[in-house]
Structures are given as C-alpha cells and as structure tokens.
Length: 432
Image (cartoon, helix red, strand yellow):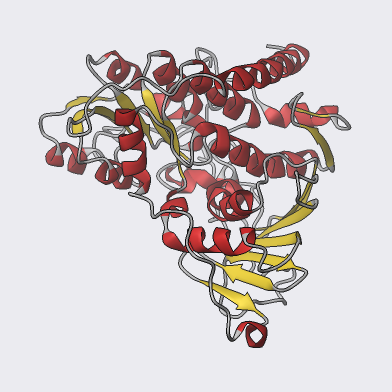
C-alpha cells in the first residue's frame, strides 16, 4: 500500500470511527449472556508474563482455550488448566466453539489484529494496554468494539485501586482549586537491545514467524522477545507506551481529559544498543477547556525520578508519580499513596466523603459486566482515547515536530509527515 493510500485510508477510518462512536453511545448495553452465578467460557491469547497475571485474574471462569506462540513458556498455564484446549495460532482459538470472551496479553504489535478478529467473531474482550501499537490501530479497535456492542476492558489495573479513587474525589471536589498544570513522570529507562549479526535460528518451541505477525521481519535475537520487546519501535513504544497509560489514566479520569489539541516531544537515546526508543523523554500535551474546567497542560517525563528532564527536581520520594498543581494547592500521587502539598497548609484536611465505590477488581468488573449486560470503567471508548493520547507522544517524537491534533479527523493538521507514524504497513500476508 502506498503512503498516499495509507494516509487516505487512515482519514477515512478516523471519520468512520467518530460516526460509529456517536451511534454506539445510543445503543443498548451488550445483551445478557449468562446468569450471575454461571461461568463464562474464556479464551486466553498469550499466557506467560502479563498473560499469566491476566489468566490468574479471570481464573474464576471456565478457561476453555489457551494460546501462545511459545509452547515452552505456556507450560505452567497448561498445567494449571489441563482441560483447556491449546493452540499456537490465535485464529484457531477464535474458531474454538462456545467461547464467550477473550483475553489478549500479546506484545503491542500483536494486539490489534487478534483483537479486531475476536470482536468481529462476537467475543467480549479484555486487552492489555496500550490497546494497540499505533493510533490507527487503536481507532480501528475502538470502532469495531462499538459496532459489535462488546463489553471491553483495557488492562490498566491500577484504575481499580482505592488510591486513584480517593485522588479523583479530592480533585473533583475542588480542594486544589482550578488545575491548569499536571506533571507525570516515570523513572524507568529502556534496556539496550541488539540486532542479530547474521541469520539465526529461533529456539525450538517458538513459532517466531507468528510471533512477528505484522511487524517487519527481523532475524531472531533474544533481545526482541519476552518483556524486552517493549524497547523496539517494531514491537512496542518504549517507556511511554509501556507506562503512561497507568499514570496518565489518573489525570484523564480526574480532569475529564480526552484528546489533546497539541503534542510536542523531545528525548535522548543514551544507551549503546541498536534499539532507538529514548532513554529520557518529555512530552507536552495541551488540552482545551472542557465544560466548567480550564485548559490543561500535561507534561510526561521518563527516565528521571521527578518532573524535570534534567533530573534535578524531585517530589519527596515519589520517583514515579502524578503532580496536580492547582490554585489552592497541589497533590502528588503514585499507585498506592497520595499527599497534599504544601503539607502544613493541609494539616487539618478532611477528605471528601467517598463517592466512587470500591471496585470489585479490574478483571471481575469486566466479567460481571458481561454477565449483566453492563459496561466497565476502562472500556475501549475511555481507554482508547487515553491510549491514543499516549501514542501521539511517540508520533511527535519520531516526526520531530509539534503536532496540531484534530481528533475528529485523526490527523496532525500541520504535519503531514506524522501520517507515517500514525500507522504502518504490515508485513506481507497480514491485514487488519
């Protein structure tokens, strides 16, 4: 497919997505399939690493089919679920009879294709963050989920914890006053990776061609697979794609953020590997005013222990976190704790009465919503907008230009060169 045709298709898909989501908002919830005490029949695509954690999260249901391209890593899951059918190819799992819903925990580059196939097959879907590898793929997944009225959940598990709920209540109660600035940071840096020096043979038990899927062909090297795939543009999106959905989820939720209007990014590659995702990075997102709320500047940093690319500014011992800066005060939070600043100003602070109920659990929420015909807090409409925003930071970094983002069009109106990073051509034999 030519670049021109690719851009044209992306714009067409973006317009269709806007229309479909508008229609989906008026559709009834997914039809009830089972009683609350019945168990769902689940298919699990990728069962080691994050997949093992997600499998444990849904183990209360009937695990009828497992899928993994690496039979060696799949051994523990197969031992725990000996009655489940096992497949190397996700397409065979989707052909398995009587599957109600699917859990996908593959690397980012293999999220969208099985996700869309599962949705088109009428399955409900749980998919790991950041939902897909590219902005285009995120939009196709969101559109397909809306069209098929699927009950969906993206794997941002911290969303279900009580700490985030209490922070959202404080922010939305106006304790900090109007908030126009948010800083988000993560101390993680990527690991160096290396290309194979010549033709290599993958280890026995690994279907490497299927693992590559739509990504460009690369000779096998251990630094491509199993967690470290995150540090290659071919397969992941660096620290930003790996971690920002967890941390930026909090300000998106608390401040009703959705799509930025501008995105700019800078960064540096400091390691000596062949992978070129940045070790340190800053992304500046600007969001327009929302009803009753001011415009917001949100800045993401990674590779540093505080909200400052130089690494000189620290916020106590919060080496990864979120800082809301309001007119009446600030609040810093990480996954499990939060603190109002300056501390002496809030000595006698009484938290607002809890209004957001405790979650039943991130996976349980999805399971129960399927059974009851409801929805989830991280459904693909909400979490898709979050994932798209995160991935736009990588688009801005890779094209080297501040983007004026038109969310309705799905286009950087000032930077046609950004289209090359909003989606990519797939390896021959693969399509979405």
